[in-house]
Image 1: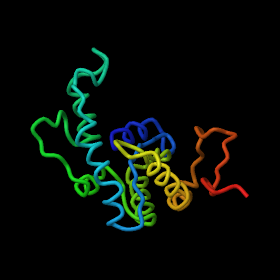
Image 2: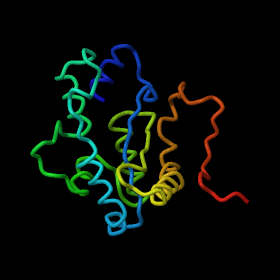
Image 3: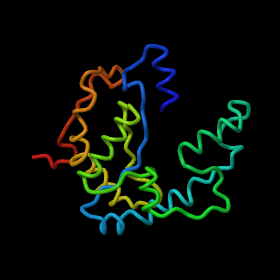
Image 4: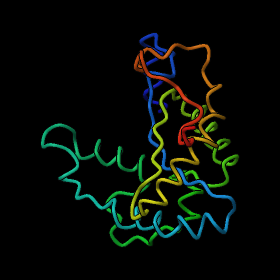
Length: 178
């Protein structure tokens, strides 16, 4: 995001809501549960699903191969992966490819991502790879109820001109109606 913010600041833009970022997130009660529930699915996603032949990454003539390579390298830390060893769940966490932990750990990590990248629109992906439906629902519910409320205090000094005007922000997402 450094390049984006350099250009944005030169144009007089400081509002973090001009920027968005997609982050994969896994929430569990402890390390063992985290590994049991999410490690295999995360490894499958990163080691098996991100193989894109460079020629298919963009329409012909839209960007140079070097630009495409730079973009993919920044997002997945690899390009083509052929011949490379597969990454483990812990390696993917350490590299920042996935934010995973207890609700408190995830909130702390996401706050750091938000501040470091200066983003106002964090798009959280709780279902990826081979995560089954019920586990995805649990991960979404826990993130919405136990993590997101801890992030609402960020960027109060900026107006989000892009949030839908009639959208309701609820802190009881996933709660059972009375």
